[in-house]
Image 1 (cartoon, rainbow, N blue to C red):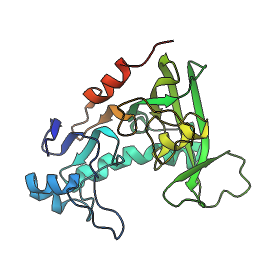
Image 2: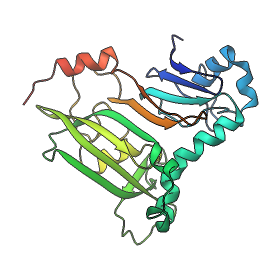
Image 3: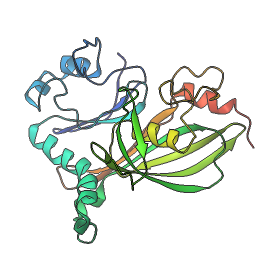
Image 4: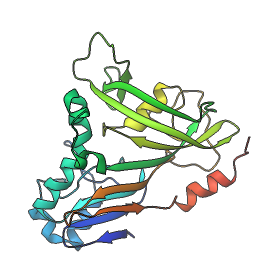
Length: 253
């Protein structure tokens, strides 16, 4: 696997994950050639960080999502970094924290580039729902409105979007997630009837797909986070070449 390391120090690895690679095996199904398998070959001490099978993986990206992935090289780093990823969710759970939030909770910022199907008219927007496992398809998550009368098993989720460019039948978005729910961006965009182009799980039967697109158009492009040295650092990942070519072939409105 040709894996690009964006940044490395004694505690942290910032990896530029390619699409088509599972981060770590989940469930009873054996997955070969996962990202953690590759990392364990190169960094065998990761077996001492966290628990199998994810070891030092701080957060996850779906198989067909590319971009920035954070890996802790020590248990201390794993705990420190995961606290930042969970801080936003904890603040939502305890409304008092919204008024007395600590600086650490404001440090983490994650942005993604997504190509949504259809033309989104609003330049910016917020998608604020509950998210839980779909009863009709256990592979999927389902978003429901906040006043859902059956909220059991569902958690609050917030995604913000801004339009980067509009095309015939598509909208290029920058997404920023305030919570880290499974499939959050994919689920949220489907909820507003603009599923991600190429997303076979969340797309509708009549959803268009650009010619040549072989996977979901979702890329983790930016991460801002505080590291153990107290410094807040920013990391960026350029849009993969194959996704850039898709954009270049679309007709601008």
